[in-house]
Image 1 (cartoon, rainbow, N blue to C red):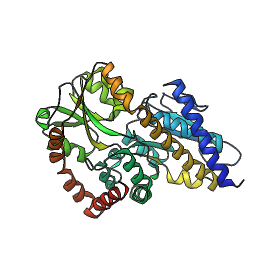
Image 2 (cartoon, rainbow, N blue to C red):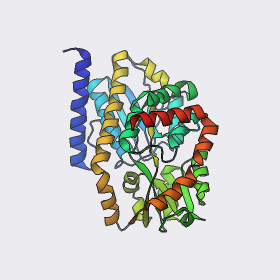
Image 3 (cartoon, rainbow, N blue to C red):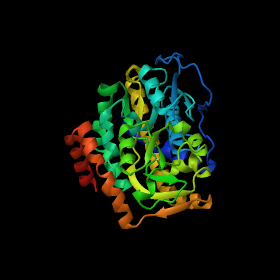
Image 4 (spheres, one colour):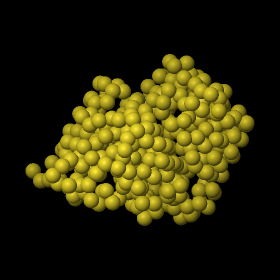
Length: 358
């Protein structure tokens, strides 16, 4: 059996075991590596010496119940099982916000992280193209685009644009929805409502176009902002509304499906280049295992998310075609903003890729 076939079989077995373990154990960490919720000195030696394990620090802003964390568990397990790695995961924004973590990856203080591409637009503005409202008709089309030539092009652009190596698309595998303390059916219901948005000028502009008052707040501070009334509403995939317990401080969910949540896993290029060719492939295969886990888990839990939120006391609103059309009409202006920022050619390239995949 050749080395490539062994790697494919190994990836499939690790993914199968990870899905079984994480499904059985719920929010518990089931990996052999460590999860650290404390701040730490991240300057430890991570040089890829052949005689010792390569220490890998992975950080993200999600809770240990989130798909983001569980996917990193899958990836870290794969790296430790198939390469010369010893991984430590820092969840809950322990080491900083998404932007802080991207900067830490740039500097080499940590080796790997992942977050929404919207939070990476200050590093590579071309990533704004993924925030095109109502662009992806369904999850399958989104996956095909991300796994295809366009997705590969965007990953490959990261190193020259901002000194981060794009590894793959870690995402919540579904759409952003609106949660609020007031029932929302049309943009008119948003007038004067304080809505938390990501640290992205584009997302600020999108919610301003709907009549809301957007406020850029770091993800790790969002629960507190909602509980204290700093903001009245926010938009995120339902998986995050549950894992972050936003349902404790919100009353309504409006299923807008306005933006497909695309996230990206990145690493420090110098660190990656210091690895052997075999260990580099292990890292890439590990990320792929994490992505596949996220997608499978999101598909399995899709219907359960709404039931869970309703059981937690939230009212879930499904928009009529006319109500949804009002959101689409106003958010459509975002395409002009994106085209001005990243170029009309890139927007059209994405739209062509979506049309080909749909």
